[in-house]
Image (cartoon, rainbow, N blue to C red; front, side):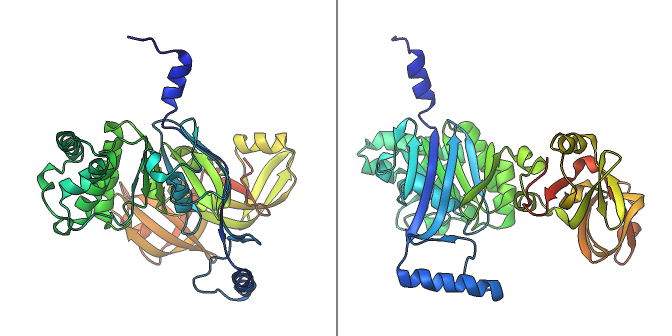
Length: 412
């Protein structure tokens, strides 16, 4: 057997990697359309315009959907692109697939520059939101269709279809038509059609959005198990931050065509770079206190929330002192799970109490601010968290997030 050189091994390991360098996508529009959209932009400042996305950049080239996108996806990594509708995540996925032209920048799949390689030659499979199954074909025929087009022998096609069906536990439905399947079964078939080709990369565009909440949870588990069984790279697009947090090795948070932050789910949750990421990641959504003064007393930093001075913890003190941070206004973020019942602290009135079983979600009116708290129900006197009751709470200063009110960027 021929020995593999170190260089060859590196190339083999990078075959399923994806590198995007300075990727930009512009949708050309006419001069009249540009003037119309700029007019709507002006109107948006005065009154919302239905169907108009106000934050996409409009240039003389057209509408900029993705800009300055730089990302390296490692071989066999599961990366999730997440963000609100219109942020450019699906456009980015379609550029990787070759379904959208890249306006500028470089896309590498493995070590190969792939900007102009035809989609069919990229060895990529894509799973769509709407399943895209052929209605007149059985599950077996749907799954094996791409192999049939590649003129693979029938016995080899059947072998690969059976392997994929066993992996997805759908062998019992191979002879059914799509109309006889549930939504969850159709999505399994769509995934099976992708993996039967043994592609370098599997792209998934909002694959669970058509399923109900229970099925979405089941399919998330299926995708996690599938990822452990097959040896390939996944790029997954969703607007659902729960999917992003549970599925991704790393998540890429996008807004208005730009990457906001890349990191593991825990890194993005614990150390959001700005208020957008902090507000987008985490359920229930993080609480924000606005116009919070950062003050310095006797060489130590404090914040003042609704008249109460709170000394910042050692981590914040160290970073702020190293930067010699001046006094300024902050936006302070506190996650609902980090709010604790207390005898002293902040007192507001409970306006909503949602019993979730092991925890209760409270909406507390704190002098006009809606503060959400997640309180465990174990050993809890439920009468204390009923509607209309006063609720006193505090939070650990080491768990708060301090954002510059002007830039909305995290100070730590």
